[in-house]
Image (cartoon, rainbow, N blue to C red; front, top):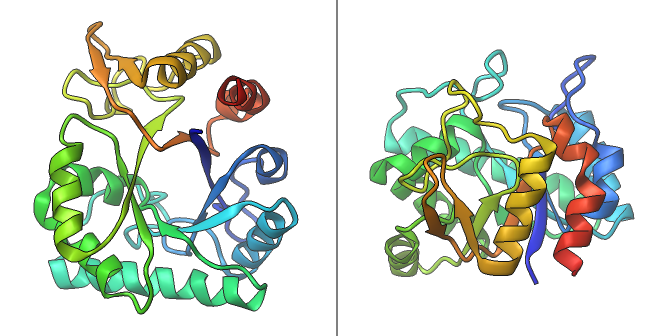
Amino acid sequence: MLLLNCDLGESYGSWKMGRDEDVMPHIDQANIACGFHGGDPLVMQQTLALAKANNVMVGAHPAYPDLVGFGRRSMNCSAEEISALVSYQVAAIDGMAKNQGLELAYVKPHGALYNDMMASQPVRAAIMQAVADYHRPLRLTLQATPESDQHREEADALGIELWFEAFADRCYDDDGKLLARSKPGAVHTREKMLEQVRQICQHGTVTSVSGHTLILSPDTLCVHGDNEEGVAAIVEIRNIINQ
């Protein structure tokens, strides 16, 4: 069955983001911010505890070091820097998870780092290398696209396993990537979101911005924790998946 994941733990200090308590009971995987785009030590600790209470799998959600931009701005980092910043964040959330008897299961980059990973082979290679070099096996979550077979070959060469994800609340461009948030209709309304979830669950496909059918066959489905429409519809999304 398709897994349901959500980006959580993205509050920072007195600044609040998302409705983690409302979402957590309905998801399978929590992608937890590691402090670089959101999250702080206390928020990370509380989010892990919430995941444990709801028996939700936990993953690292590393980003570029960009708190002000919420990790949505690309940075010109070297491959060595990308591998190091991913390793640093994964180790932090993994250590905190262990303190609560939890086992970190996977890595899913956030925001601009995720987009750069999908668009740039050198960035993707640096992230894959960081996951491959970790002291124990972790899966890496990538966006399901028409290039998924190529991405799987890249991961196989490094001995890492992938989870491919689709997005419930985002519109797809014709090339299989997400439509840029700067463009109209990039984030779906509730009605379009639920329609897209049904299509993914029933057919493993989405309809692009121009009406093309894209075959994705994902393993996991993402609802963004900072999307109020997505959070409000989480129970309906869960029911569609269960059906």
